[in-house]
Length: 56
Image (cartoon, rainbow, N blue to C red; front, side, top):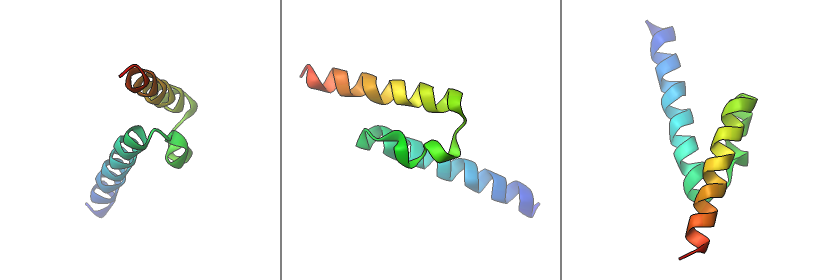
């Protein structure tokens, strides 16, 4: 049970870090925990957010 709880806790922490990285427009703080595919995906989300905010 402890391993399951620890895993769930880590997943939640990484999710929170991802949301913070998107908000701060800097994925570098969390890319250490992601594989290359996820890093590219979230980097593109951050870039898309930057572009949409620059149009405002």
